[in-house]
Amino acid sequence: MLNLQLGLGPLIILLIALVISSLRILREYERGVIFMLGRFWKVKGPGLIIVIPGLQQMVRVDLRVVTMDVPSQDVISRDNVSVKVSAVVYFRVVDPEKAIIQVEDYLMATSQFAQTTLRAVLGKHELDEMLSERERLNVDVQQILDAQTDAWGIKVANVEIKHVDLNDSMVRAIARQAEAERERRAKVIHAEGEKQAAETLMEAAEMLSRQPAAMQLRYLQTLTQVGGDKASTIVFPVPVELLGALTGSLGHRGPIPPAANQD
Image 1: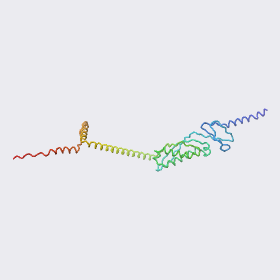
Image 2: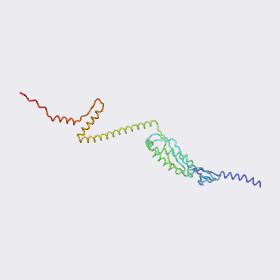
Image 3: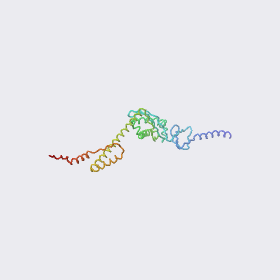
Image 4: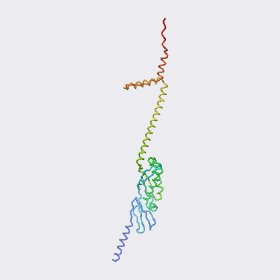
């Protein structure tokens, strides 16, 4: 009896160790891909699961969003400008079975595909589009990545272009271009102001020409404003019409009659 107890003791200990080693605890954001004798069996988790040692193997898969930096890539734009572009990709595993079976290392595969896609998409656009239309380029890269990685059980949520680095000569060229653009806008605004002022003056002239007395009142008002200044010299324009009127009034008086001859 004692020998039987001594023989069962190690067996019980072995069974207890076997049960303990078969227990696995998966967190809420983890799933376990179970293989039975090398063949896919099922996906388990989260919580406490049992994995039979020797017969089953488990691969843990994290379902949280992964933030992956895309290293700086040398890109030649459509207008032959060389730039360095870096980005960040946000993705997560939605199908643990595909992420483990369909691709060897889904993290490395997604990173490499993101780099090639970034170069291919940005190479089709000009430099101005890279700098001003980042939102549209982000969407284009995200859609291409999402369509390709769907077969791997991965969902690409977002892609953000972080930096577009230019060399010093290109930075100076862009600065000169921006300065020229600002000067062009200033000239256009000045010309528009001159045009509006001319139109307003033309309307005012038409209104004053309807009533000659209004023109005289305007001259008197101008004289009042000029008289208030402390300038030593005052130049006041006299209209030709006023001179003509004065000349005409003098002409109506007629010439001075010659003196009568006295014998």
